[in-house]
Amino acid sequence: MTDPQTAAGRSLGLKTAVNARDLGGYRTADGRTVRTGVALRSDALSRLTDADLAVLTGLGVRAVVDLRGMNEVTANGADRLPDDGSVRLVHLPVYSAEHDIYLSLRDVLAGQDAVAQQALLGDGGAERIMAEMYGWFVTDPAIRGLFAEAVRMLADPDGTPLVFHCTAGKDRTGWTAAIVLTALGVDRATVYEDYLLTNTRSAALMDRIMEVFRTNAVMEDPTLMMPVIRAEASYLDAAFAAVAQGWPTFDAFLTDGLALDQATLSALRKNLLTD
Image 1 (tube, rainbow, N blue to C red):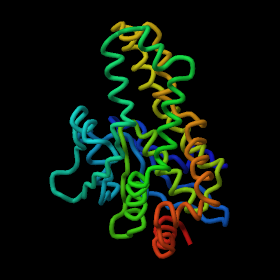
Image 2: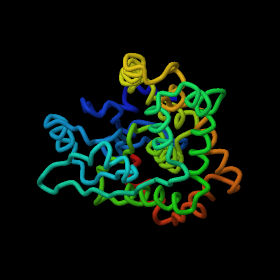
Image 3: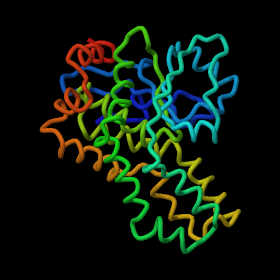
Image 4: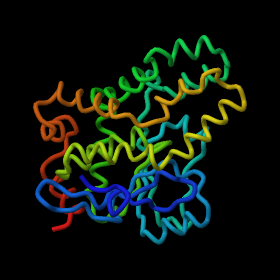
């Protein structure tokens, strides 16, 4: 496996998007390396400072894929991007009312009802909600189509460097990265390593969230929220299990489940891998 603190998993250095990092640096089974500065994953870009914008400009970013639902964009703000139109913004909302965990959490947190919070999140409830969402990423045809479109954009050399993100850069972003890295030939253990790196990069933010819950008495037991705000290997397990249940191999999932033809997959590898 690759040390995520060195070349792979390199932070982009955005002060207001602490989980923004480079997919480059990971090695593939055939000995190639994912190019740096091409495929970039992040949390939301709605709070970027002028200095952060300068970093994106310096990276030569051409496109941003926002995987958030419009409810999240409305609540938390649209991405802040350069005013000169140099960055193309594409919205691919991985959202369904049936899987709107943010709405469920908002209501139960706003009510400050410890019994309701325990009923929703306690006794493994939070973990079940998250695992079901990851399974839905795979089983819903329309949602699969959105992830596939993000992959197609990464396969276009004229559209990269590209940043893809959701709100925390953890779940939808994490599954997108898992699809891309697996399609490139990165081993499964390293895919999980990249996924779980969110917990390192966002540790201070998670601590602040917990402190807000405690200080404002939003939750009697703030630890109930930890399974929601952390990346857990079991969530990624649920997505890969859904793939295995529906398709004989991950390659079959790419071609049949995501409708990515061989030309697109070849272009993805050419664009994102060293020779």
